[in-house]
Image (cartoon, rainbow, N blue to C red):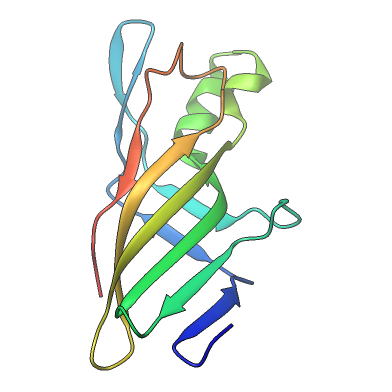
Length: 131
């Protein structure tokens, strides 16, 4: 670590998308209902990143768990295999500018781990810049 570069560890994260996202299942498009994202506790390597003040750039990697409680409940009522209703694990790699007030405008791609709900790499996720 240098004076212009600070390594950090992420110890908590909770986010939600109340609008949900479209999910295609068995040729039909379903709405997920609210989506929640939490930090995957105990993930190895740990979630964290670096603040590079020399370049005014922030980079972070988050190991997360995405859940669709409403969709999971609907699928459970249909009697589907429980593997379809489990949270999706993912790794979000994000980067962005360090702003004048020391906040970040991070965005990035999310690599989803294999999950029974999605076939052969058909799912994609990302995070758009925000404040």
